[in-house]
Length: 219
Ligand code: DC
Image (tube, protein in one colour):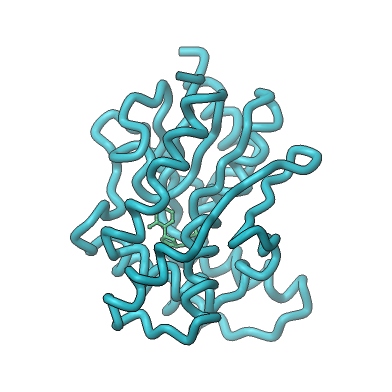
């Protein structure tokens, strides 16, 4: 097993920013598991499958091959050999991923890939159930969170800077809805692992959070 750092937490807590930076500093591979759920979600959307149609989702799962590779250290995600790295970032894909990731067969489809990556190399892996389920033996586990307001602020800023017009209230509502779904689903709900360290980034800079986690790796 490689050295495994597991970072879980709700949407918009800064997991990917922190995990990416941390991986770079430590020379580890960053594995974004949310991207894998998003790739499957994109497939469901493209096939015109409704998320409530569980049978169709499960069936489609078998036809969707998700793979990842790295280009200049940046994770690239493939859906049936097509690079979908930028496409999966759309809001609609995120919402579809949030709904369909509650289906056990969808989760099972990605589990081996995630465990295999962590077995072969040193990784910083982020998601919702990494410390609790995917990598229970991870050497370092962090539950990274921030208040809904902070997360909505960050998302609003990010979108506005990209020139995307958006509504703050709608973003906050979306975040709350996604928390609700991710935390209350029956399979692999988002929760802090017993041995995970809670880091609330609401009043911390990115640098402070990365340093804090780096400190945990040495301890
Ligand atoms: O982190 P993200 O927003 O890219 O993830 C998209 C959705 O995928 C999220 O709403 C919940 C789901 N997800 C999951 O259930 N388990 C993971 N390990 C990662 C993501």
